[in-house]
Length: 414
Ligand code: ADP
Image (tube, rainbow, N blue to C red; front, side, top):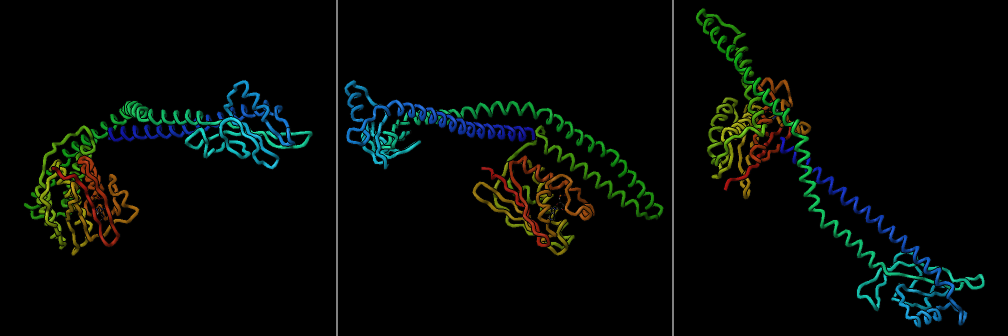
């Protein structure tokens, strides 16, 4: 339970980190890219304002030819694209690198450029050209945003490359923190489990005294040819209490990570046969048919006593919750490395809303009926704990009035 809780907390810690890292990173990159665009737009606006006074009108149409030849004479290399458009938005002149040949504010893609093999992304800004108070055209300036894109790509790449190392560091820290956080819980759980085991052991002493006294009384009554109805009731109650104590001890042990049991290689037949022999008698008494499919010749790794108890609980339940004349099957399926053990019955079934709870401690679907049949609602909790200790899984399918199937999936030993 400790390791389970600790690893669950660690996984949640890492998932939270990954979510925050990437969502935070995405927001930061988005804001950063917008900031870069805004400052680039400001610079383009300034540049356009600086060039605008150089526009002249040699043939009535706006032109920057003279400005360009002066710049060429000075050997000035134009890093940005400068374009002149007429009033209707048709391009008249273009200087500098190939640009996007339409009016545009914002980002545009230059599909074909004589300088670049791939499409170039440019940032673009334009101003109106006015002559004697009349709009005569547009001046547009553009600059490639490749360097900006390269920088952003580099940031994303660095973030992604660093993420596994950071996640590992977070996992290690998370595991350390959750280990510290769960220690007090684990200590309390251990105390509680020990208390249950001790209390259950202590209960055995008075039960033994009750049993011995009842036996003496029965003998005395027999000697005096007397009959009494109370004594069988006391005997039944004390047996039930003993069974409850035993169940609590088994459950506490199975759930305690400290409790180590010896795991050996077991042939499936070794576990199944004694349990079936025990259940056959009870089912015969109830005039039920217990049908056992051919047991596959496979082995599993586990603790024989616990596995027998697990099967016994499942089969005993199937018999207990199936009326006289019903059927109980024990079936097996081998699928690759997996072994399925299916306990199926034609019994009363379990309502849908109870299916999720049947493995909980002290849970009984029909309390009065279950108690009448000797159950405390601990049988399936023990089954579940044993299954988990064997790294196996168990599931239940049921239909009220038709029957129930408990399916255990275990690993076959090589
Ligand atoms: P109990 O000792 O009361 O049988 P379990 O933990 O073994 O306790 O089972 C919990 C509850 O699940 C039972 O009270 C019963 O209502 C239901 N249940 C278990 N197995 C079956 C079954 N094969 N058919 C119908 N109901 C079942």
